[in-house]
Image (cartoon, rainbow, N blue to C red; front, side):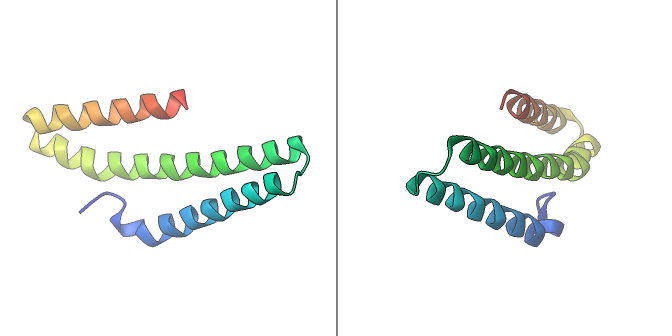
Length: 93
């Protein structure tokens, strides 16, 4: 079971909303909308994806990382490295 399993429906709902935003951005480009308006929508979609990512990370740390810490050893080290790498990717994006 993954850390996000308890909130899976909520995550899927948010991701569908982001998917709709991206389709809307595509329509804006197809319809030659003003550049700044398109960029504003890109920023909103990016922020929405970042919000999903942060919630997933929080749930991962609260579930998967805690379980690995209880197990200790190599599993703990691996999960800590994965979390650290994921945070680094999020910070770079």
